[in-house]
Picture 1 (tube, one colour):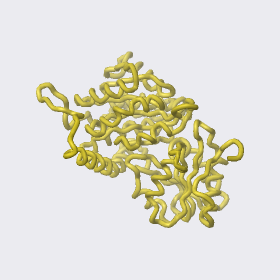
Picture 2: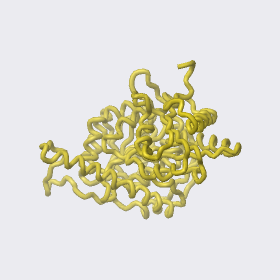
Picture 3: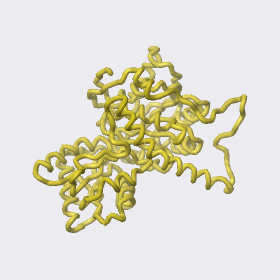
Length: 389
């Protein structure tokens, strides 16, 4: 194990090298470009035995990843924001053809009036594409989740792609201490890729063909079944990762000070670190608050959340994206999970477009959550808006 000072982007690049990815199709876009630049350095300097393939767009990069993975090699690519949107058409091919591609998405805002700062409105709309989605809190988790992702994706019981999402600039360009495993350690945890089916001229076959209504519904059902099958594998592989490397993340979710919590907040991404400090401050005041870190949006941890909130009087859900239906997408998923449990659930939207998330922001969220236990004033709050709205 080596201690390095790395940005989140460079932590991802080191993880990809350790995972011995064979083909890296890539197109640069801020703020993920550092990932691809670092991997290209590894390849150029002979530190990584891989084929680096510059693409002419993100659509092409994903198409190249699909083609390479279909021949039975381990692939990786990275993107962000408009780049992910440009991949949209091809994103739907990889899951349906059971290609376990791993991709890093550095979350940033998308569309008119967008910027280059953290927001989840690029990846959240793609959660129905069939890709698994993980959201990481810090650079160490970014490195570790890439390694776990290949084990999860390539398991014969899963065989689905995954995007590992990390916050623009808060993680991608900020440096911190990261424990980088030795190659032998990763090799013992992650075996070489063994594909189930490959494109081979000696054994011709079709992939991604048009099918009639006689078959398409069953294909979608099988894809849904595979996604549900992935949930127990995520928990199992995270536990095995902990035995190998001494770090684990709770599987689908992580609980923080939840054993006797009466009021709880669900967070995801780097905001979780700030929310932890708010929880500690409120606990010091005698308030029984707790935190649930959501690590995966797909598959969504319905059962784990139901178990985690037993005994909770009121629940809040943090969203760093909007669905333009009055609520955020994480809130909609969580409320669907806990609707039978009878507690008030409130949505707390903040950090849009990279707006700062501070300890007082999360204290304010907990204030509203506690108030909702007595009287539900409203279901959705926006925090940190300028002016009265």
